[in-house]
Length: 319
Ligand SMILES: [Zn+2]
Image 1 (cartoon, rainbow, N blue to C red):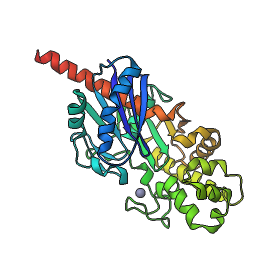
Image 2: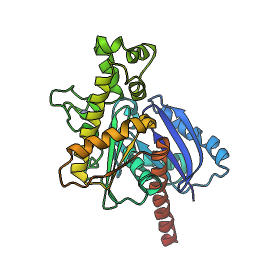
Image 3: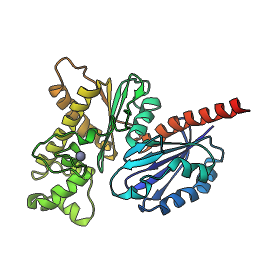
Image 4: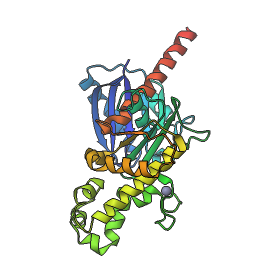
């Protein structure tokens, strides 16, 4: 039976009805950062079921961009937009709103499940995922088990490994995190604080509106921007080296909208990791999802599918 999958992202909320890897319908809603977002998600259901041509689903999968308490179904920690989800039981909300059980998971973990179940890492039992974007999200799969840790923090804080002891303070409290050195929010700070960059083609774009990592890639061949682009590549490479040292993966999945320029980024990352990884470490394969925007929904489909099956078994046992 299909599942309803809801990806509360940094810039928008993506909803889908999926049957395993098949996406029957999707839609998006703006992310206003208030609990009215939850009402808009509930109201989007009619549009979705009409478009999918069916309204039955066995469970709801919910992904959030932060540390998630799966037992309580709540968000424990994230930045800005999701204050309203802190301490709120989203499984209870989903049960009230849709009448079926729900699973709540960190978005990078969901993306890794999606890619390792249906996507570019299908069948892998040891994999790491890194998403480059507003921040840097990570997740790890070890011997087929999604790494969560006893306090639900394991594997997902790889964007917060220190890559520069003298680097900027991160909004997590740590110093010189990969995310504080090389992410969309770091880029906006870098361009605003450096007159040379502000006068560059990248700075011209920043003067017209918010810039992202794709702007960095597209302007990398100018003399002012090139050193910054190279620094970002090294920061991402250093974070991936640490993830490989920690989790020993067969495959590293690098995702995020900027990976539409995978041909520019992936070979450099692979070269950096190969050069700096522990000498006898396995050299992992590198891959980028064919449709990174749907990794999270696919993972939620797999996770919620299991929850739906468990609920059906319970009902059967009880009757
Ligand atoms: Zn940090």
